Image (cartoon, rainbow, N blue to C red):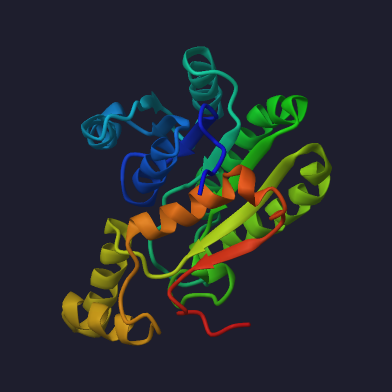
Length: 261
């Protein structure tokens, strides 16, 4: 299937590893011109090298999600080198595990700035160009916690749920202009982040990380953790011309893990 995004400019945040790197690769394989943002250039080298081996171009742009000026510079660099951004993938790192009670107000603020305010601002920077062109894709990666809150991940559950409400509202505002806004929800995808959470749970429960991962996989109808590439392919489809009538949705890529209807 031709996704119809060859030559489209994509900016993928968190592209230095995990889901972001896989998304950047998936879009590049479809012919998109991909820029990837991350906090340091070193984080982006692996993705750049990976795509170079596949014969795909990749523009690394340093961007600190806590610094709005840095985000503006990342967009300016992308558009100077590649052209106006048509596809934006909002992908931010996850906060540390912890309960909902007793979190210091400043901790909430710091993570809100990195995980939520940054997404709002970055989208607002590229959105005028999308509206003017009559075509755009705003895809925000969230967490299964927005559907079924995950114990001991209170900050993630709360802040990523904010992104769902924002994306749904935005979809109603821009859908008539050729721009879509959707959220993608990963289940247990085999990334360093998920491995870190498995280790944290293992430490709390006095078990091995392998035991935790095995038990977790057993709760998934697919019987395993997902591959980053499987998640990335879903994102690439939402970025495509073929997905022009998918707007304001929350798309699960979880192997059937979430029991909620």
